Length: 173
Image (tube, rainbow, N blue to C red; front, side, top):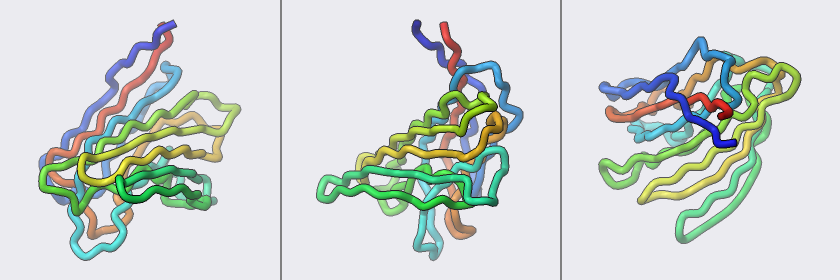
């Protein structure tokens, strides 16, 4: 059966001092969620430019873990991000990329409203002048996801104007 993407919400930033965006009161009527991000950041002295996704405002107990594969055209690698509190590692945007180049990310939150299993999240990202990566994440909670927050990991890293986050629900046909 084909699935249908249903737009839930979109946020497009118009100022360049934003460090986080939150989608809240997410209905549990879908089978899965998809978060599509088109992001560029500005760093003002920070050395780490990672972007994390926090679910249901949970930031204690180290409930998030990731594994990843990446390639840059001249290098590749893989690894594991140990369980942490700040959230699922969504991506490291192309902060030093050519002006106007944005990182694109698709994050699939499968079976997000099930209250008997931990949540598995898959994401893939890439930009024209940086790298491409695939990540698998786990949120070690059986709670239904009703809030998704996307944030930089530093007060000196900002989402640039034009950055867009769109949340879709998938309904079985």
